[in-house]
Figure 1: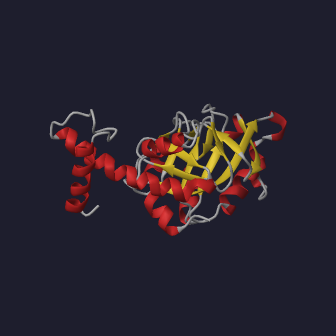
Figure 2: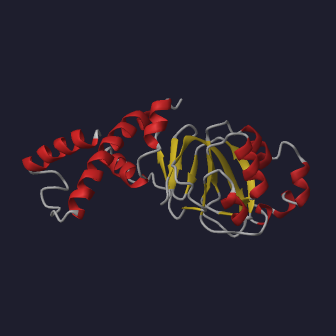
Figure 3: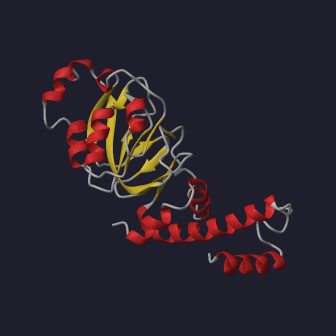
Amino acid sequence: MLAPETREKLKHVSTATLATALFKRGFRNQYIQNVHPIAFKGENMVGPAFTLRYMPAREDLNPITVFLDRAHPQRKAVEECPPDAVFVIDSRKDARAASAGSILVARLMMRGVAGIVTDGGFRDSPEIGALAIPSYHQRPSAPTNLTVHQAIDINVPIGCGDAPVFPGDIVVGDGEGVIVIPAHLADEVASEATEMTVFEDFATEQVLAGRSILGLYPATEEQTKIDFAAWRVAHKR
């Protein structure tokens, strides 16, 4: 369960800062590789992971008629993904065929889903980019998923862009990409990243004013700590 205050904190920190906070805890591979926003909406995507796993398609099991089956895993997952969750698709890093298209993504948006991520590609990517739902993929891909992918499992542990994703893990996407926070660490990582962001804002302002990074970043000089404390008061941070 993602606490509202944790969700709010995660909306205002970068995936880079979160990656550092996770690295301090020994996590090196939580950033989803080679996944990019189709059209960044200006606010972070945040939500617990709800997953779909694809396997390589076998031709006799994937005619176009499989979509007539209401229990087809891809269609079923779109209708079952909870509001405020992030729909994460394991497409085996294979963008030769689409993981989904604009109609399915529009349905997720209308159901209140917080965003969608695939390590493959989306078809109709210009239309998806115009929707008010954060969407991340490797690259556009027009062919139907059935040509390469077979939807096989819903809400199971997956790999997405070499990152492990367990159902309920907290997924955060910004203008650069997507990172996955183990669920049990979400509260403490969000709090630490929020504090790190405040200091990074201070450090950036100092550097742009001409200050050296030595003793500033990281803050090893006592004067840096004094200056930062005064800056926080002045900026009400």
